[in-house]
Image 1 (cartoon, helix red, strand yellow):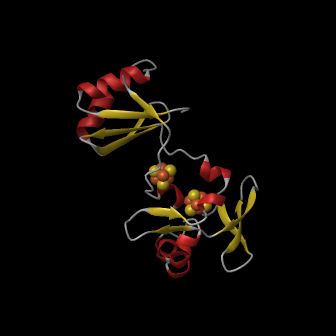
Image 2 (cartoon, helix red, strand yellow):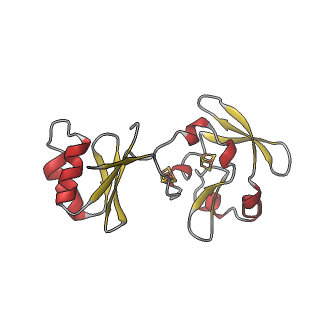
Image 3 (cartoon, protein in one colour):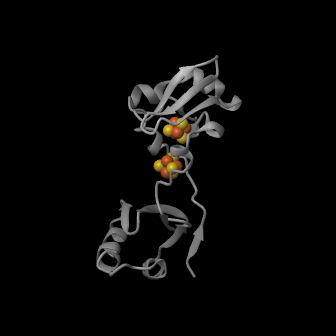
Length: 163
Ligand code: SF4
Ligand code: SF4
């Protein structure tokens, strides 16, 4: 039986680093109070910087310096994880975003992501070959089929519901 679960964000930050032209800081209302806006659909929300991230929010702008297209509100913690400093108030575009429909791992380590139905993103040559030979040519492969091909190749896959 293959595994399915709810989408889990591993806080790699990728989705927040290039979205600054859509998710914008519209207005500053107070020291930690802002209006955040989706500049495409014009959704707007008032947002407060979460207390635990206030210090890093004010003191560390390195992400925005290194990635000019990054969202105004993203920060990188010393652990290397990226955080949304307005997480409870984030816009729909952010809260509903799933960057992949499944994650593939080997010996507990993530080695690939599936985008959409059958598009693989991976640096694992063995996995890329397996995918190219067995999954891509299959006519509308089911999750069961994909899971069994991967299992035979020594991989595990977790599909996210609703994808
Ligand atoms: S949604 Fe995906 S791309 Fe964005 S931070 Fe989470 S894991 Fe990374
Ligand atoms: S508001 Fe938060 S989740 Fe949305 S792009 Fe910015 S940092 Fe990422």
